[in-house]
Image (cartoon, rainbow, N blue to C red):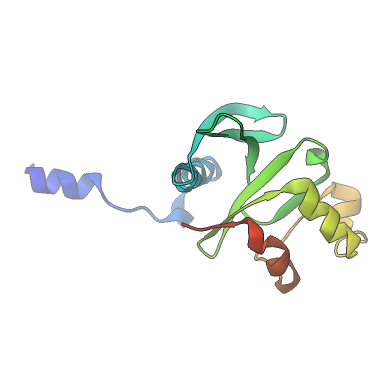
Length: 145
């Protein structure tokens, strides 16, 4: 095998849709970590969901630390209430990192999910894509790449 052939094999992009759930989580962690590095954060992956977080983002100033849970989409879950957790996800290539409780409170205040079966019986609600009403709510949590 030539050096050129080896390089071609090493650097073949993957299709996200072909990954299993764990591989997708690893992929998303790496992507979000790279984005946050541009903002001065070092991301430390946790081996378990410590206090609801998949990883900790630590700023180089030594004063800012965020517990972040990775999700595949905009998600609210009762198990994250009062845990000071941020949710990170991608939507159509855009990265969002939002404080769970603030977004949940605003969503509940507008009576968006209170009567849903998912929220009442399964303690969770998520959207496959960001609904129009939530775009305005999330705009300040969109992280530029």
